Image 1: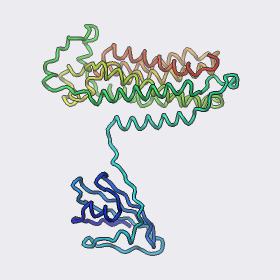
Image 2: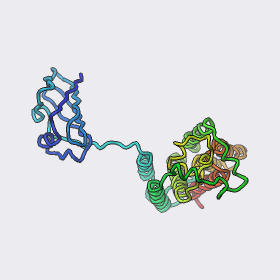
Image 3: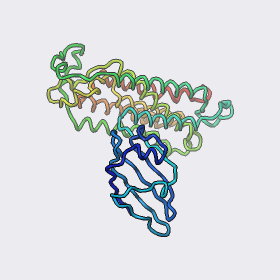
Image 4: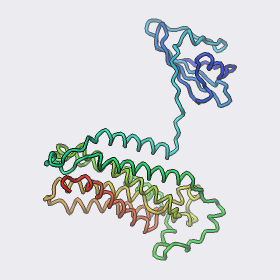
Length: 348
């Protein structure tokens, strides 16, 4: 059962007196309490001016329905609610804040999987091992580099229409890749997004291998997370340091809204290509380490190279990156994808 009560004359100061909580510091407040006939909760939303906008009142009666308040009556909160108050801050939809939250959760997950360093002789049957001596610097470095990259992006100014009109398409762009400035394909861009969103799932294919599930399940999860974090941090930092303009900035067919975004000056190097390369080469590396004598190694490595190559083609076709952007992105991602598992190799 749900009712909405409008309290037009009440102020945040009134609720402060009732609950003893400084409401002026919070855009949203939840009160949890137990009514004598059931469990109740209510959410108070108010504008920055302090005026209460609306009260959503939900009741879950155990024996009988609680009393119904009329919109003209002021409810007596001490009578119906306990004094437990929880402050809920508004959740930002900003990409950087959301990404930092996700990466923090991933870091905590890695930390929960890493145990005290053990002798390598104790893990003879495992190709990988985990140790704070190896993983702590990787995590700390990723957090620092990623934070710096986010800070640089936040401070980076976007292009103005005047600046875009004055741009010289031949300045600073090698002749062999100027043709990309004429490319603009939304389907190609969406296709590259499919590769990007699929890439983090590639390590899950290793779960098909019973040897991997038995000997490297936890180690593989940590290596996958560290590979993703390392590649993301490096890509972020380079993009916001170089500030290369994307090819579509010079294309009259591209929408002006895209050109005025901060992302329009994040061309070097390709994050899509580097992410797909890092995850695909890491997956191939871990499979080969578990099956060094496998006859499928040429197919495994060939597929690992084909996926980022296809992503690179789509990024160039879509007008998002130059040739050098995707080539450096592919090389950087492949290096990270091979390096992180190698750092965890037993006996190396």
